[in-house]
Amino acid sequence: MEFSLSNQLVQHFDGDCSVVFAFDDSNNKDLNIQELVELNNFDAKAGNTMTLNNVAGFKTSITIVLGLSDMPVTAKNYQKALRSLASKLKELKVMSVMIEQVSVDGLDKSWTYSTTARVMQNETYLVNKVGVSNDKEVLIENIAIQSGESNAHDLSIGLATANGMAVARKLGDLPSNICTPNYLAETAKSLAGDFNLDCEILEDKDMEKLGMYSLLSVAKGSIEPPKLITLSYKGNGESKPIVLIGKGVTFDSGGISLKPGAGMDEMKYDMCGAASVLGTMRAIAEMKAKVNLTVVVPAVENMPAHNASKPGDVVKSMSGQTIEILNTDAEGRLILCDALTYVERFNPEVVIDTATLTGAVIVALGKHHCGVMANDQELANDLIIAGNTALDSAWQLPLDDEYDELLKSNFADMANIGGREAGTVTAACFLSRFAKKYRWAHLDIAGTAWVSGKSKGATGRPVPLLTQYILDKI
Image: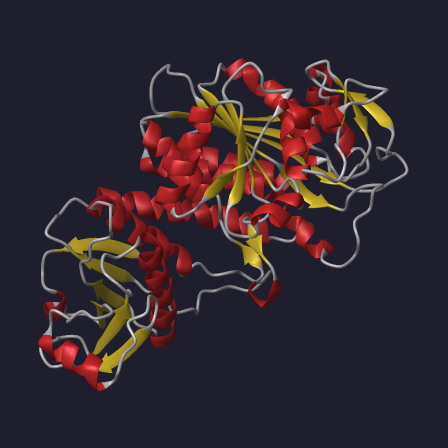
């Protein structure tokens, strides 16, 4: 899909389809459109559409009227309208489109252009069935946005972000018999080749030498060997890198603490943290952003077996701290803690880990916000602001010492769970014990990384949030 800015009037667009906006209690700029809106009693609620054919004064044979509710236009209503538009365009099978210019309350044109490109590209993402090609699918080829400007840089930012989301979505949707730790490693190598990145893959023997026994304890029961993947992009000389860590459990059976069978197929999505940081790297590298970025992915499969970790086992982490494993289904923190110690070598400016870590975050926040916890309030604030800008929202949860007390163990420095209460917070408290040497934040994306039901699939979140955060730091 190609995006462009055009200074011509939408009425003069010589393509397949023109898109104009309608508002509650507001006259449309084009009198012919306004007359048809009134004649059809069109409800201009955000996302509502009306398809018109051969409107007088328009060159296109199809004109779509797209509702935006009240003025001023809110960011959420604009995104809702774009998603509805993408669905309508796919239904009509149009190839070229021009969208009328609109202002979004409190946001500049750059935001409108980049958001339009990101949302429209992401909404036309096609889920590939295994072994089936989408070559015959009809895709929108060209989208023009009415504008008095000619700088298309903001469009490229939105498109790159959507391409990063597509990486995350594809990896998340793949079945776990295909998307193994090794597959994630090969994906990283492919990204390195495409974008001239530095790539390093550590094997189990390498991790053993480093003392990563917490991470290795999770992989013991699987025939799939673990990988520790590092990708580095240098766009800003010798400055300290932003480091992203993504949980890469390619399938989580729960181990000996076996999960219930219902819905266990969705545990292929337990590597969406890894997918999102790889997708973010794809976006930043495509943009050629002036920043240094390193992503680290601890990748394992968590399975029950005769040699799997058992509740009550004690393991030593790379940091030297010991952990009593009370529940083998709380495995994500066991791989992340060693990764958090490992990244100290990069002298990071900031470290952000991203993980489908707890079901408790869904109880707390539902499917709308991811949870953010941090040892630095400014960092937490910046992530929340970035999420709001990118329409990929995060909500802060506490990280108080009182919660940390719940991790006490009689047999090790800490337990890997803290009981039923505040499960999302105690998981973050566990991780914080390994992140004391730098500014750190944790994003729990268990509620936002994928959707269930008939539309089951990965969402690509939080690639927009992470990408926006990085761009805000440049």
